[in-house]
Length: 207
Image (tube, rainbow, N blue to C red; front, side, top):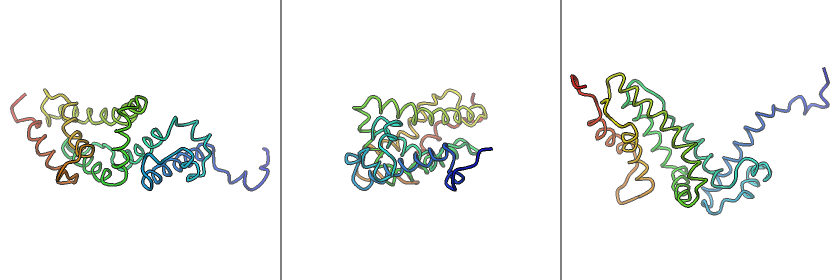
């Protein structure tokens, strides 16, 4: 068995662990810089300096700053506002929606608003948001609705995508198109849930 050359060789973390730490440093730096100076001021050079990770490493993994920030916000959403099935369909979406609203209230909401604006003129960013963010979460949410239909909680004639558009679209609308008294809070989530589940809940004896 070959000997380690020095103490550093013994203590050196595995390549995968180093890569994970570098990724976290890059994503954290991008969010910090966007919060401090605004999205337009964030550059790969600034992220490299702030994170201590070489520019060449960053460019090997992301095509531009927008994609870095998308992954940074996505990592926050998946960690802080996951879609996880609870005892009922309504409870599942109540928890998910309230966590998402809480996340949107901070810097992630501001960055996301700007990213979605950029995506309207950046096809690659728009496709990445759909493929890596929107659609994976919608797949989970569709299956939760279908489970509710199988259990008899939800009307079987519903279009799952329309239900999701109403539930989450109302939140996204207030994030992206602010207007007077357009508050994003838990009460708003409950009002959406009351309105939607008053119409989608299966009625006894009705098939």
